[in-house]
Length: 242
Image (cartoon, rainbow, N blue to C red):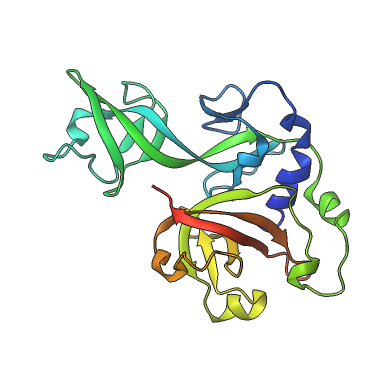
């Protein structure tokens, strides 16, 4: 995650001006299934490369939230008409079709239709997808950032626009707080930290502690420390993700 924010802000600038949307693929290959589209690169929420996927030059993993139409084997539907946890959501009515996501007991899913072998369902979820990136090296981008004498919040390199991140809102812990001076963080689906969250600019009417352990959407300005390269999101608003 350390250099991804800078990489998205600058290395992908070449595709931000495209007239069409930015395609989101299920796998890091142009012949892979396209699962959605971003209207602008500023909407991309960077993700780490999954452990079972080798990093590929020219591609950037992102968290992508949408309502998908997918399929479940009829045997994977529980008596309460929910998906059995651990079973695959398929992109086509075939057990050979690519898997979009794995079912959990917290999924928001509705059955659209049922045939002999498969159910067609509407699934609202967040997946890791892939978008094409430029060939600019992240190290070159970081070297071009303005230098600062110390990692003071007011001196950090800043993204050009407000960014919204989706993740689980957690307390930072002693080590992270001592390093960043920030009490909260957002974690991704894999439990890894997306960004530390500075809540000093969140309106007082919003009770930050109420969001602990919840999936949230945080809007604010992304910054990166010079010394530790930690990504910090200065939050302007926090709300439930769903």
